[in-house]
Length: 197
Image 1 (spheres, rainbow, N blue to C red):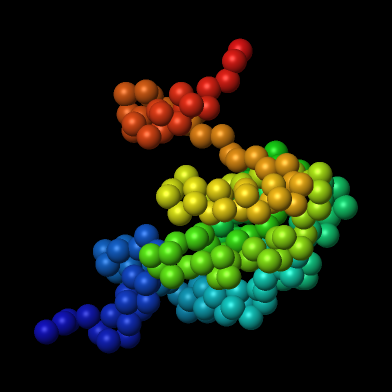
Image 2 (cartoon, one colour):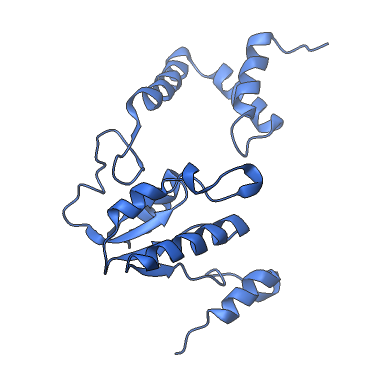
């Protein structure tokens, strides 16, 4: 028998559906909302509904935007001959936070994963191939996982056939990291990708 009211339990269940949110965190979030005043709860609900009604995917890069094309694709200061390929729209904001990349992006919408039934036709690859031209540079910024590496190898082959310069993000030790806490795969990649001074 549960002593939590059904409406609170429903809110807990909804929060628990979020990635990285377990039952305990979902309960904390639900009780935070419960303690909040009505105006704050209304603002939260309004923000959620606005995201669902106003956000669309950029017809050029596949990133999220409220105007099409997005601000990055339509910015004349961005280098249109340098495309960074990422897995998901959220990855764009990781690069933009660093404030060092001056090119444009292309969102795949996932990675190749035959075990999950995700093949090339399920990703935003055709639009990418339509965007690239000979002599452009494409940076493959997929995650360093089996699926990410497989996707990068597949795309690298397709892009090289079109005369595109293809590069991959460097891998290795994080800034501020300690060698004793580094896993074997990261250390191996750091050794393979070493540079001369």
